[in-house]
Amino acid sequence: MKVDRLISIIITLLDKERISAQKLADMFEVSLRTIYRDIDAIDRAGIPVQAISGVGGGFEIMPKYKIDRQVFSIADLSTILLGLSSLSNMMHDDELRNAFIKVKSFIPADKARDIELKTNQIHIDVSSWMGNSGIQSYLETSKMALEENRLLSFEYIAHHGNKTVRTIEPYQLVLKNSHWYLHGFCHKRNDFRLFRLSRMSNFHLEEKMFIPREHKKPELEFTEILTAMQTKIKIRIHKSVVDRVLDYCSYEYFLPDGDEHYIVCFPFVENDYHYDILLSFGNKCECLEPLHIRTEMKRRIHDIAAIYES
Image (cartoon, rainbow, N blue to C red):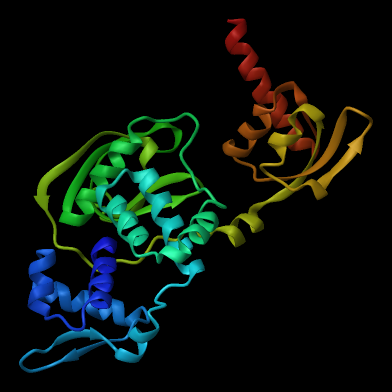
């Protein structure tokens, strides 16, 4: 279901007293079934569309609702524009850009300035400063595969550098924590998996199509699990890395230690990811306790130093 088509249908219904399903189907070059599905989605979204049967019949927005014509408030339009502009900036998709243009054309002249000001109050850009240049093309290819129900194949690098070749049925693109993921049914594992786009290579859109199967959305909320796994460790940091440490814990856990340092109660999980976070602070961070984590840090630092000594 395309966002720009739904918005265009709403605009058409507002501009016309009544229009037949066939005319809508011809206008947007889709089937009657698609139009009926779109009308149902618009109605469920809270815009009351009624169907009039017989000669001269068709769809229309209920008269009492149409008289007001305040389909979207300033806040509604600002939110829609913000969402569309953010997505179009990330995905560079013609459909998203067209939807953005159409929504802007729907703004009453007397509200244009207020909506522009509110929309510009927030700017969302989740693209990284530096990163994998192939992700953008992967996004476009993934979107095409989703629309056409076509298989995708790629090489995937998982934990510990293990590389496998995967073929999947794509079902959803997911943006989580500034990273793009693709949720799909993996033929190799015979199950649904979540794949991070930055870990892919040799990405191909296959000619073969698939029949969509029943699926659940991926589990993306792990706050309770991570909280249960976390322990608090005590680290001593130099003031020069305070801004970076604040990416992982709030300032309430900082206790001044002289003029140059802080003692921080730092949330920690005993895995490579969190040890690498501590190591990334270099000599500006010292793990004070517990002893076994401090000992493990010493071992990892020794292993790094040994590489350069050899």
